[in-house]
Image 1 (cartoon, rainbow, N blue to C red):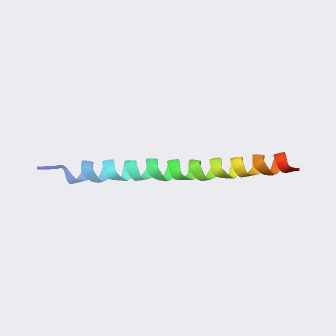
Image 2 (image 1 turned 90 degrees about the vertical axis):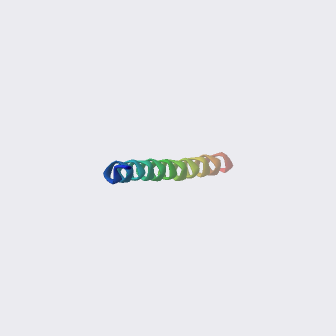
Length: 41
């Protein structure tokens, strides 16, 4: 039998990692956009 608590904990941990990755990706996109603006000026 699967331990539901451990399963939930693992899923929750993965979700946190994914959210962190997405936030980091968004910040990286913003950094790239800012650097491109800097090149134009």
